[in-house]
Structures are given as C-alpha cells and as structure tokens.
Length: 125
Image (cartoon, rainbow, N blue to C red):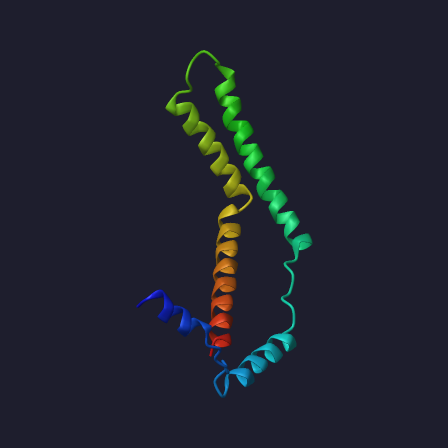
C-alpha cells in the first residue's frame, strides 16, 4: 500500500455504531453495580485482641530465645540449650491449650475462604 492510498482510507469518516444489544447490556451492568451494597468492612476492633495475643506470644518466644543466647555471649548456644527453650515453650503452649486455639483458627480460616469462594462463584453465574 502506498501512503496516498492509506491517507485516502484513513481520511474517510465512517459512522461507528454499537451493536444492537451493547447499550442495553452496559446499562444493565451499571444498574446492577449501582444497586449492589458496599462490602462489609473487616472488624478490626474485634481482631485486635487476637493480634495482640499473637504479638505478645511471639515477643515472649523471641525474648526467651535471645535470653538463652545472651547468657553466654562468647560461646554459641548448644543444641541442648535450644532444645530446652523449645521444650519450655511447648510446655507453655500445652498449658494454655494452644493446639486447640490453632485448630479453631485453622477451621475458621477454611470456613471464611470456602464461603468467599462460593460467594464469588455464585456471583459470576
């Protein structure tokens, strides 16, 4: 193609019209989106105690682990010392029944993910 032919083709004005159902389908989608209620905000105030408890537990674990290391700054902690710290931490976890808490959190997480997935798939239909 030559430049003159290309210019002639591009200089012609053509009326571009949408297909027959395009405008109606767009307006229907806009109306549906306008009537959809806003998403429910995450209840951060209710989650804060759990987040704080996790932060405190991790802090205690780190302080305990670094306390063992800091007792003998010149020597590396032995495997038995680290094992004792881990055993103490696990005993504390048994005392506060952390296994049941972890199981409850895991079940809650799976339920939320499953319901979110089901809601998303039913919305797409």
